[in-house]
Amino acid sequence: MEDEYLGITQKNYALFCDFLKNNSGVDLKSNRAYLVNSRLSPLIDAFGCKNLNEFISKILISNDAQMKKSVIEAMVTHESKWFRDGYPFEFLLQNIIPSVKDKSKDVKIWCAGCSRGQEPYSIAMSILSNCISLRGLPVSRIRIFATDLSMAVLNFARDGVYSATDLSRGLDDRYIKSFFIPVDHSCTQYRISDEVKSMVSFRHHNLVNTENRPFLGKCDAIFCRNVMIYFDSETKIKVLNHLKGSLKTGGYLILGSSEFIPEEVSDMEMRRFSNGVVYQKVT
Image 1 (cartoon, rainbow, N blue to C red):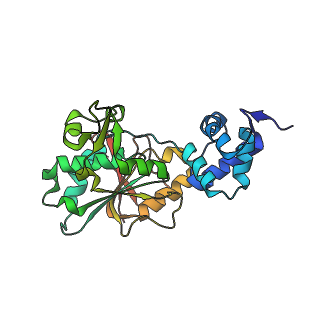
Image 2 (image 1 turned 120 degrees about the vertical axis):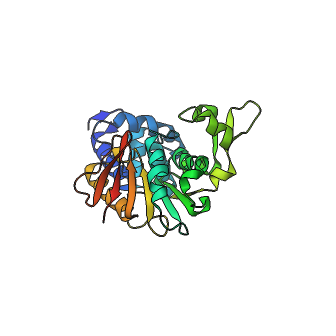
Image 3 (image 1 turned 90 degrees about the horizontal axis):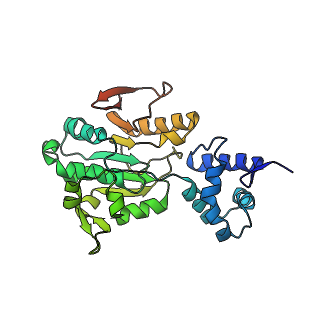
């Protein structure tokens, strides 16, 4: 009998890793059976299986799109904070937006892998709070596109209701007072204002699908933060080239603080700013 670890045969684990990588880009590596066990176990009964190994076997041969969607939703990490690391939002206000010469054209900002909406809403709030930095650019000309693989987190972000605990993760009181409305008298739930919501368009998009982008035209800036850490080198290069192709010449790509662009991705130059770095498309 084939060896099992946490209820998964080695063969099924390897095949499931391939399935997840092909459908989401996520690279589980060889020592994450515990993660598969913890995240898929709640789905076993729902899809009529007796144990985890049987469930994985079913995933691999099934044409059930809803089941596969549920599995990918369960396996993808949705971690986010408001105004994460600080400097990307400063750079946007101090460098990217002021560099726009033609105030009659839209400024496009893409948040790729937006999770539950904290990042695109942070961008919108930083812009609304610092209109002087726009130097004559109308707020209505700034278009923020936010995409994610998960429909569940996109629906959450569109709804825009966050718990008090959610707001405590990186959000100053001044933003809460200016842009959030309590949903109930106990102030345990808050809804983000329509003014902020109106600046962000949420769309479904799989970064591994590099054949298309979720909007027309190219971007002035792309935020793709703490997403590459889940990809292997091959997928990372493929996705980074896709993002580069979605930027205007002179546009900026902003990655997570521990992420970098490998030398295999050309025409992207590092720019140091404050406590971090950004990358600019030079040709």
